[in-house]
Image (cartoon, rainbow, N blue to C red; front, side):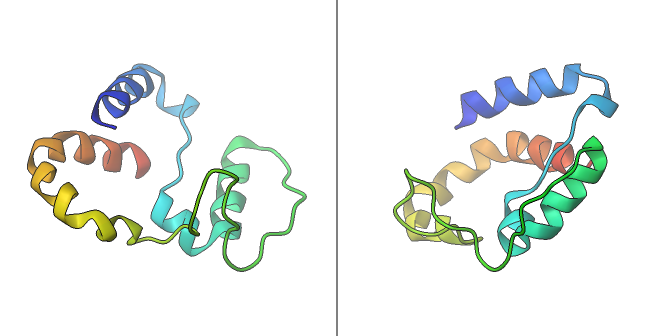
Length: 97
């Protein structure tokens, strides 16, 4: 995750800001329709699929998306958080543009 995120953030930060559009996973899971509407407005494209309720699992997902799904593996993830904090902060800043 860390290596992929760093490469992706480096590439996104090299682009002019007006060429980058993002969504946050937590907001997308909480309100998919609103996030898609916001993204489509930003990209000036039409969205013609009604979204209601929770997102369905993808073909490769065993359980539905949830904002705190990661906490099931907190014992493994939390010890790594300090080393990941810089990249997490960069990703959050990029998502909040």
